[in-house]
Image (cartoon, rainbow, N blue to C red):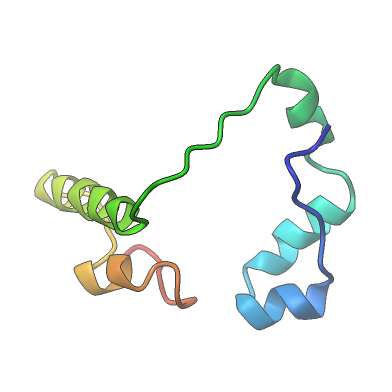
Length: 89
């Protein structure tokens, strides 16, 4: 049983973000079947405010930065769901 994800085609995936072409290929090939078979149940959490996710991610990036690890910039975290430029610096 799947969670509801399916391939959309390479062109559609690339239009969102070129990195999604490989993910789309795995979805289309049934690449997640083994994962779904190994999990008894999935939990989906609905948030009242999606901004909480970005705030949590920003907190994690700030902590990683404090430890000297490569991180996203604050601007990249703020735009993480909106562009293909959200890659560690």
